Length: 207
Image (tube, rainbow, N blue to C red; front, side, top):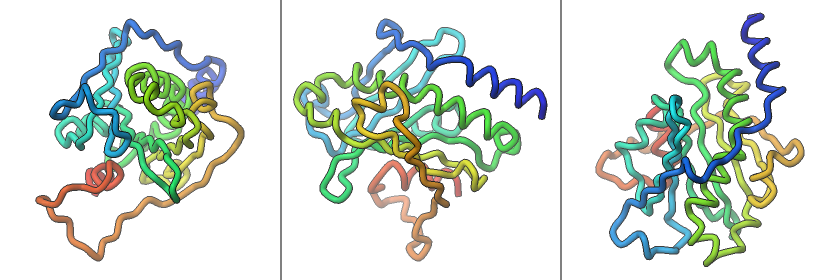
């Protein structure tokens, strides 16, 4: 426990990682997606290499089920644009802990790491999908909601980071809300049915 506490103290002293555009690789998935500037559907998967610090941002108008497996095995961050009460929002999903006991033990550490690196994630999205933001500059005012998925109630939560243009510089204020994520179990999952959102797919991985 003392080691974990020392690690958390060290994290608090370090600022977010500096975004280096030269280390970002952008991939587009979907037919004729390079010319697609529609907002919905639009999803992002950001993966990283621990050894080189290189980042890969995959932008798609479909949910790539195979690549989403990296969400819980390689610490990928996934996101999608959603319309909530008529307003556009960017929903981001981070896997803090689940069935893996070792991840449970490191849940607090992982939560703080994801939180510290969130501005870098947002900068990667802004840079990698710059065409979208040139066509729709109003998206800079869209709210950013971060979903931390965990089987531990303390870390299973949604945090509102404010407008994207502010969130990219770090969380603005304390706009958090703890939740217990759940899906409607009254309808059995149909593998042939197209998922409506990344949230549904990611939660299915945790079942």
